[in-house]
Amino acid sequence: MKTKFLIAAVIASTLTPMAAQAQTRELERDRREVREERRDVKEARRYGDRDDVRDERRDVRDARQEYREDWREYRQKNRRAFQATRFNAPFRYRTFNNGVNIGASYYAPRYRIGNYSNYRLPNPGRYQTYVRHYNDVLLVNTRTGRVVRAYRGFYL
Image 1 (cartoon, helix red, strand yellow):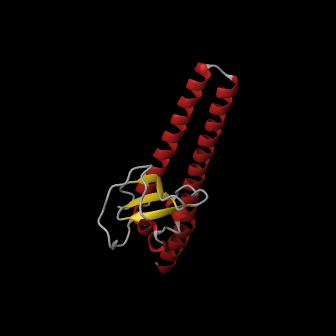
Image 2: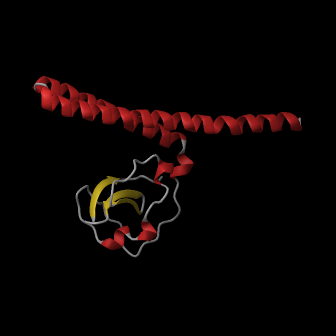
Image 3: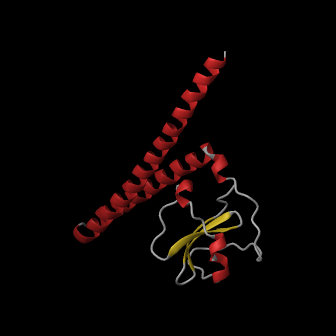
């Protein structure tokens, strides 16, 4: 009986990382597809007509939507990864929109998210960092203090 349980545990431990890796590959493929579609839009603007540009923009929207759906599916299957600890801050909760300037205290080092890849968030650009603000995640430009992207209700 113990050997069956041990064998089942070994099999489960080897299959779990494979499933997570497959999800990661699917998200990476979707992200690459979005980049390729954006490139096609640029080419259509340069060499095509209005209909070409319109079609390529539609393709970009579809690729982004597919990426979002896959990311939501990953989040639903891995709910424990998105359960956060209690958030204590010397300021009250505020909803931030994209493009808003925020104070440096909101993106102080103690609020920064260092393991953004665990959440399947895209790599931040130069001078950008992910910051936790209660249950939200903000992508902030650290030079200007501007919110580049706000993910509301990120943590469950």
